[in-house]
Amino acid sequence: MLQNKKEHPKVKSELHPGNKNQERYDFGKLIGSSPELAQYVRPNIYGDESVDFANPDAVKALNKALLIHHYGITHWDIPPGYLCPPVPGRADYIHHIAGFLGKNNFGKIPTGPKIKCLDIGMGASCIYPIIGSSEYGWSFIGSDIDPVAIDSANRIVESNPSLQGKIESKLQTNPKDFFFGIIHKDEKIDLSICNPPFHASAKEAQAGTLRKIHNLNRGKKVEPILNFGGQNHELWCEGGEENFVRKMILQSKEFGANCFCFSTLISKASNLKSVHKILGQAGAFALETIAMGQGNKISRIVAWTFLNTAEQTKWKLSRWK
Image 1 (spheres, rainbow, N blue to C red):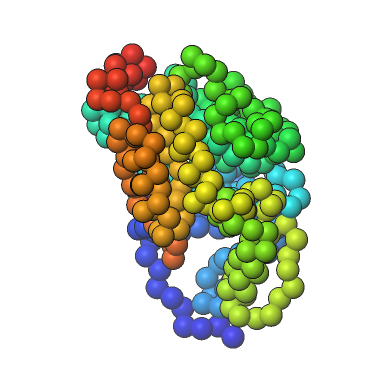
Image 2: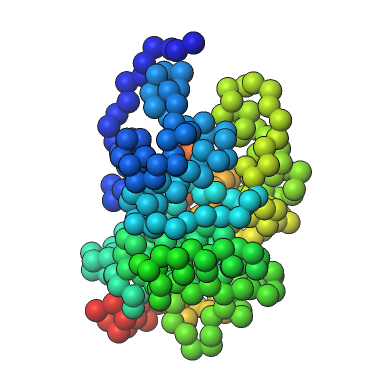
């Protein structure tokens, strides 16, 4: 039964102003860009055009349409069972961290292929490198511990001329390492980004996936859906998000002179205090927490550097001018 039609703001105000996904989905235009999306578009309980976000095929078709429509990515796919990222949220990370770099570069966002970004745990979707290279022209190194994810990302890059020469995929052969084996001794990286595993165990990850499906189905009992939640390493690690980020921070110190700015998404607000404490113990020269809002979900980016003021100025003048 249809409920009273909701009044929607034209713009999703919680998203970054530069996000191309800020306005409500125009399904007519999206279907025009990707006709396969049409089979999944139906009126929701309010009579608005939408897709079933509990259906992984529908979500994948929507994201594919967004990538075609907004970023010109005509060939994109992920293997069955791998995490399908929400494009608007991933774009927000890129825009917020670009703005942070701009704030630290005399108000001008550094752009172009000379700006090199490392995506730790790029995933099969290659989503952050796609958006970062499309929006700001940055070049990317995408690392992952999963050979299947690396192969998938390589296929995406090879199938889209606009990405070729801008994204290099690297397999991390030691799951305990973040930067070792990826960054060369004298290599300069302007920025590192990361979307850490959220959960602390497979059981917790499965419970989270079932809870998400339950909420999307408005409380109706449903069976688990394969290909909804992602691979284990995408969703959980021992100690969860806090432990993952702690290890990354401690290793980042060893590459403090190689990278202008390190950053990571922090989904749990309760982890912020611990993350800030670890950064202090590691000797970070400066850190900043950047708030992000995505629908009903609130998250944040923590960015840090080991370069002092003089070293930062030298970096910007030599690489960003």
